[in-house]
Each structure stands twice: as structure tokens, then as C-alpha cells.
Image (cartoon, rainbow, N blue to C red):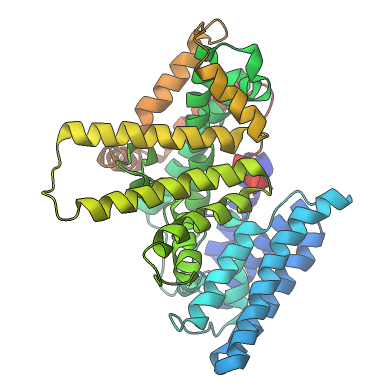
Length: 451
């Protein structure tokens, strides 16, 4: 069940009222949320009612045993949990090719479950006492499709609602985030995709260099508004139940270097790669290993998106850029530091265009298609016949809106919260009308729902 469907909001409303009616007692409240979680899985396919709870149950009891063991037994138990969750990802990727329809990848479930396993294995956290609390946390419905990946040990304590109420400010913020996420998805991301980006990436040789460049820039903002829009809806949905999920984006195209970009883009995933993959690789036995590990980490991150060469190239580009930046940092560490405006602007432009180059391989169906796009960009033919004024306007608006300072955003949230409930409802109603007017062909799936 995608957050672009009316059914999702009917379910969210039902969950909201049922949850706050029984919030004073933890077990009934957990049962309400867990029932909503399982219903969402069932809407994707009844097989998920077997896969997710079975995997979660195995993890829960394996980790309880692991916490009381040491040495080889402990390593065997963590390996079993790793096998279950990685196997779950592989199963969901392989079985569609065998004719079994699996519309939902369980990648984000598995990553979330592994935070618990690995945190306890490393003794960074203690096992969760409540099976019901664990199962509710690891299957939490707003994060099913595309995160944010949330550490289970940070979710479980939030189910203690004793004395908790939903303040007017929190409720308004939740509605604001949900409305903002839908606006990003329908009014920006889907419009850019259907009005130029998809056509160019499908058949790049039919378009001029100028049109291809417009589509490449368009895809950068389509992907950002699509994915950050989902994250906004997920965070807002959780907040309606008093649960705080971690932020997933912080103005990524304002990054001054590639490492800064990964601190701003898909933050929960980049943190997961850093904490559970990069730090698990062999240490600096040689001077080369830390740089090689960056490349290995990003290539594996690329392969998670799909087993194809274009994702390998995407990972290589990001991993190499990170390694080069680290080398540059080492070289510059003894030199005087400067923070000039020109330097920041140059860093942002360079970083954005390195990311843009990598997005070409990320979006293209094959490496050959990506190469064709790059050839068109340098073809010297720069007509813009297929770039409509509305597309250019939406792209420009998307770019400008992305650079709105975080303080301005927070001010907007506060203002929205201070308006009367009637005006808040009117604003959301106008948004729904705008979406219905613009999205005549319905909503495209969220890009990250296939990962």
C-alpha cells in the first residue's frame, strides 16, 4: 500500500483514532499498530504475512540467545540472522524472475532488522525484552516501502506512551510533512518524469544535447523530490502516532564535497553503510585499505539497488570520488584552512555535477544507454524544442525550492501550526485539488519502492 493511494490515508486515520483511544495501555496500543503493519504487508501480498513475521520472530529469539553466549556460538547466531535477512532480500529479488509476483522488496525491513542484530552483537545495545514491541518496531508500516531505516533500539523505547499526548504543534508538523511530501511527489517529481525525463532516458538518441541536459538535471530533482517526498510522508505518518523517525535528507545538492553529500542524501542508508558495512571491512593494514574500503562499500551499495553494470558504475563513481576526497583531505591537512565564498560555490558546483554524472548511470537501463546520453550531451546540438516552458518552470522552481534554508522551512512549519485548524484543512484540500488537476494519469510508484 503506497502513500500515494487514498486507502493509505483511510488506514492512517483509522490507526490514528484507534491508537490514541487505547494509548494509556501499552499492549493494546502495540496490538493496534502491529495490526496496521500486518494489514499493510497483506495489501502487498499474503506471502508477506509469512515472510516478515517469520523472519522477525527468528531474529528476536536468535538475538536473545546471542546476548547470553560468547565465542563461536555467538558468531554462529549472528551469522544465522545475517543469512535470514540477506536471504530475504535475495529471495525478493530472485523469485520474480521465476514467475512469483513479489511487488515489494523487503530490503528496508531487512536493513532495519539487521541494525538490531548487529547492535546487540557488538554490545552497543541490549536485547529487547518485549517480543510484541520488537515485532511492532521492525515491521512499522510507514517505513515498509523505503525507510527511513531506523534503529530498532531507538524505536522500541518510543512505544512507552505513559502520559504521552500528541501536541497541537506535533500534529500540525505531521500534517505539514505529509502535505509537503505529496506535493513533492505529484507536483514536481511525477511532472518532471512524465514530461521529459522518462522519454529522454528511454530513447536518448532522439533528442538534442540541450534536451538531454534538461532531462539529466530534471532527473536529479525528480529523484530528490520523489524520495524525500516519501520520507516526509513516512516521518509525518509516524509522528501522528507520537513516533519520531530520523531525517533522511538535508539539502543534499548544497553539499560542498562528496562526503558532505552522503551526510545529506538518504542519511539513514549512508549511516547504515558506514556503521554496518564500512567499519566491518578489514582495517588499515596498508595505507591503501581505507580508500579501497570506500570503493568496496559504495559498489556493494550500488549492487543493492540492482545486479547490473550500471549500478556497479554508479557505486564506482561515488566510491572513487570519496576516496579521492579523502586523499585530498590528507594532503591538505597541514595547509592553512580557507572558507571563502568562491571556494564553497566551486565545491558545490563540482560536487553537484559529480553526483549528476553518477545519476546518469543510476537512471539509465544499461551502461550503453548511459554512454549514449553522455555522447548526446557533448554532441554540440543544443536545441530545446521538446523542453516546454512549463517543464522549465517546474525544474527552476524545484531547484530554487531545494535551496530554501532550513530555518525558513522551520518557520513555515511554525506558521502552519499557528493557523486555525480550518485553514490547515483548507490548505490540504487545495493541495488535493491541485494534485487531481495535475496528475491526470495517476501516481507513478515511488522510485525507491523497487529497491
